[in-house]
Image (cartoon, rainbow, N blue to C red; front, side):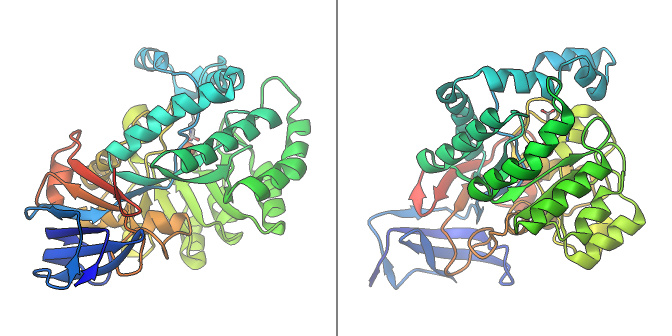
Amino acid sequence: MISTDLIIQNAHIITVSARGEIANGCIAIKDEIIIDIFEGENKDYHSETVIDANGKLVIPGFVDCHTHLVHAGSRANELQYRLQGMSYQEIQQKGGGIHASVRDTRAAAVEELYQQSLERAKLCIKHGTTTAEIKSGYGLEPATEKKMLEVIHRINDESDLETVATFLGPHVYPQDREPEAYLDWLLHEGLELAKEQAEFVDIYCDVGAYSYADTEKFLKAAKAKGISLKIHSGQFEALGATGLAADLSVVSADHLDHVTEAEFDAMLRAGTVPVFLPGCSYYLKTAYPDARPYLDAGMPVALATDYNPGTCPSLSIPMMMSLAVMHMGFTPDEALTAVTLNAAKALKQDHLIGSLEKGKQADILICEIGELDDIIAMFGVNAVSTVVKKGLLI
Ligand code: NIG
Ligand code: FE
């Protein structure tokens, strides 16, 4: 018998790999890694810890590839404003929206920011997210941008949630300093900070956020420094930045509610990962984009929460899967791939996570249900009962 750290047996496994489903399968884990995954009874492996899944669904840990998890304060008050008819942009123009989170995040001591963010990280894990990308961007000045990156790394080091840091210094233009001076900082010291402290840089190009011209400057400068790129584009209008970003080889383009045909073609050519964020459509009551053309074209379509205090205060990946199937043309299998393997591609982590295969990191969910369809059907219910992160039961 081969000694292992953990065995999960009698499981209905969806591997999210070429191997597909295993009706009655077993996974053997040692030193954080899946060392074997096979159909039928276990005769070869021994462990002190054996979990009988009782035929329940076993899937890869969710990868939330777009979040703003680190911020201080709440913007729950904005719901009332929007229900009275104010738009997201109007709230922002009146000093609310992103600017309210900027004020709260600047004012919070680093320990306070960490504790508030840690509570959210724990909720992510409970809902099955084992890796989350987290962006800076509620600083809009150097010290707070650094503080946010420090907290993102601390969550990775001290909690069960693995994090990938993205520098989103150009989230919106700051209200209390010269936009040109801030842009100058972004293009020089900001990009140096990103190179040291982040895996990606990102910029929000839309009405009420960065212009096409500044987006072009920023992405080109980041690319010249060899930093991997992401973009927020096409949430409210197609300003052309999705096509520009694809031509500059961004790893992912996120939001994509408004995309021109030429931009779609540019993404297809470049192999960009399209990341859809249905929680924003739900919470802002805007139309859901149709993902079917992207899926039919064979693009590696991903889904994420965009967790943030203003446009999607939910961090439930299962809820996003349900919205994507009911409103955006995904099948349940496509939705699962979108929040695991394709989300890992959006983070350049698909060699390590996102599927259940020999040699991959043991990030595994055991659900309280037997079939994938149940995740979609039971919207609003958390069906994840057991989370395994790097081979450890959480
Ligand atoms: O996703 N894209 C639009 N909204 C921002 C949300 C940030 C916020 O409102 O706090 C984003 O980056
Ligand atoms: Fe976002």
